[in-house]
Image (tube, rainbow, N blue to C red; front, side, top):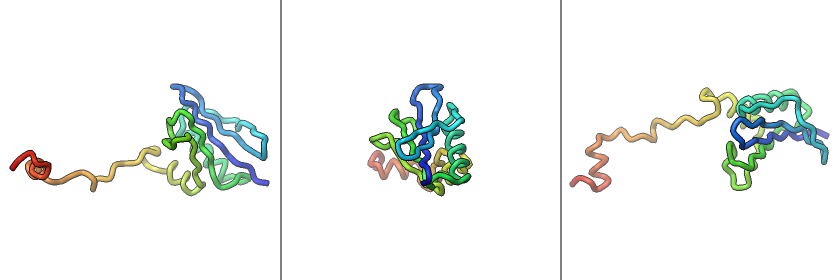
Length: 116
C-alpha cells in the first residue's frame, strides 16, 4: 500500500509548515519542517519522486495562506507540483504582458467615455 503525502500550512507569521506521511489512519511527520512554504513544496516533490508515495500532494491550509479554496484544501499531482516548484519566479505566476494595454492614454480615455 502506497502512502499519501500531506503538507500542513501554518498560517501564523514565522510558523513552521509540516509534511505528514499518511498510511491508512496513521499519520507520521516527516523529519523536515520550514517556515518557507516553497522549501516545503520542493521537499514534497523530492519525497514523491523518491517513490513509496501516491503521485500527489494534499495541501491543508485552513488560513488560506497558500490555497485559496474555500475549504483550505487542494491536491497537486506530481506533474503539477514539479511545474509549480520549477517556476523561475519561485512559484508566483508572472503577469501576462499581453494583458496590459498598449493603447495611447487618450484612446483608452475615449473608450472609457472620458473624452469625446
